[in-house]
Image (cartoon, rainbow, N blue to C red; front, side):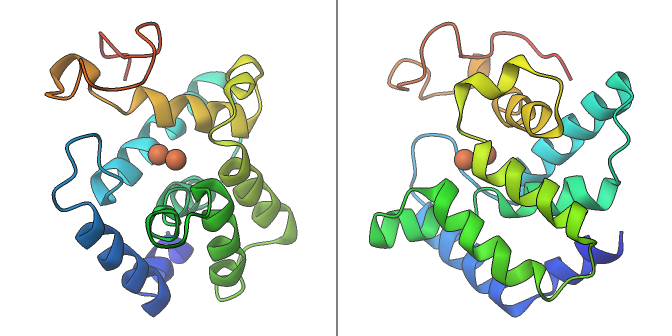
Length: 160
Ligand SMILES: [Fe+2]
Ligand SMILES: [Fe+2]
């Protein structure tokens, strides 16, 4: 995946990822690390395959790698991370090689990944938001009781 490979070597991406890892080193709740990003990508890809939604795999992985990258700006500057990730994505996508349509899919998925009503439709952004939630192993989480996710939102089983 050409753009995924380019992004994984991009200096700004690596700088933000390392800052995020440092900021969350002692985090008790779910981390926003490379493992989470790839879990989201893989689950979202499965949804797209199952539902027959023809989305380039490179689009899915780049969206997943970027969707929480702005968390570090949320910690440091109080910017909601969906907005911060969107702004970072705009900068990083200009150094990648997607079509305008593909860039739009990525930016929309990032912008909407925290919106609850997204999980009701069959769009790429809705599958992406669903994958983001499904990636969390709530049933095996030491922070289960302290986590502010509602009981109905917490994952008790594995779907993918
Ligand atoms: Fe997020
Ligand atoms: Fe996430």
